[in-house]
Amino acid sequence: MAETYNFGALYIHAWEWAALPIYLAVIFLVSHILQRRRIRDNPLYRFYLWGLFAKIGGGIIFSLIYLYYYKGGDTISYFESALAMKNLLWESPPAWLLNEFGANSVQHYSLFTGATGYPLPYMYYDLHTIAAIRVICLLVIPAFNSYLLATVIIAWVGYWGIWRMFLVFAAIYPKLKNSLAFAILFFPSVLFWSSGILKDTITLSCTGWAIYCIYSVFILKRSQISYSLLLLLNVYLILLIKPYIVIALLPGCLIWIFSERINSIRNTLVKVLLLSTIIIICTVSGYFVFSQLNSYLGKFSLQKIAQTAEVIQKDLHQSYYHGHGFDIGAVGNTATSFFTKSPQALAVGLFRPYIWETGNVVMLFSGLENTLILVLLLLMILRNRVKILLQRFIAEPLLFFSITYSAFFAYAVGISTSNFGALVRFKVAYLPFFVASLLILLQAKSRIRIEKD
Image (tube, rainbow, N blue to C red):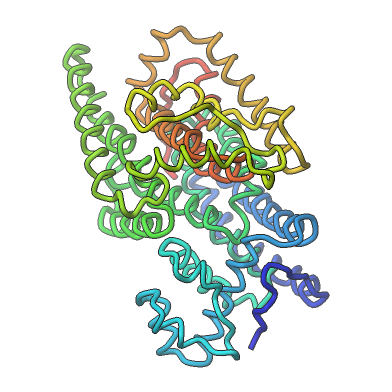
């Protein structure tokens, strides 16, 4: 059995580096066969291998930085907890089944032994974290107890959902495929933070799959049973790991689905009235679902988000942040207070840390990216009048969905996050959508024919 007593400190052994080319060769062979089969019908697959190796490269860089620069981190805790789960599978399959699919209870935790190792208690007893560990456990099995190889496998599997999301955007905007590839497949911070052994790798991939399934079922109307089941599976996984992502996705997705039908109506007045009605219904529905899942949303719940923001204001002045915290001012627990803080929260969620606020190499790259995003936003504003923007939002449902999802998520993150380290990781969930939206809006208005994927 593999030892799991490192508690955050881990090193890559020589045999892992020796095995890495073998794993990469197998992944390349399988992916090359897939690309060769699909590229005849869909030229977009010329990006497939480039995006895959960028993803795996991001995972390897992530591993090296966390192992040798930060000297540990929660990614290693995820790995070791998943390793204990995997060891339990070999020692006692019935006990593993109870822990993989049953409750994360004290009784089930007692099934682990000194031989299997123990998941870290603070992770095991957290409902959302144990869900991620259960997924990671399945992916570390072929890694032979190697953190490096497990990272490569998880990056590979995680890429499948990102690729599907790219196919949707590039099918609707085929003339922008190069720009969209940069935003979705090659954006540096997304490659870094969504390619390692973290929750974000799983949830972003599931989000990509969900977008693709919605597009296939409701827009293209094909393979509805299989894609519907796949949609339910991915939404379920997101709900288990980061349920607030579903809340952010829901209103925009509903508007996207219904807007595709509304756009076939020629009467402008009827179209505007129907769209306004749908937006109201989707907003009310989203609020209802949000309220029902309150106890499940953690710090993003309606009751706790104000409390979290208040605690953050007090916590920011503690010495352990070493200048890496930020303060958007006092946040009350009233609707007025939340509304007045919207500009600051959105600025934080979309554009910070600014380049002069970075304190290390990782933050510096994030600061450079945010500078690029600000430049893109300014160019977009200069090239589009407000009337044109509103017309495009109505005419292009995927664009409207991406903007609303990004804005909703950015606001929630900006008002409830206390330091830049957490901020840059939370942004991964919506950054590809936001950057893709800016690049789309920079181009002349054009709804290109939908290509077959």
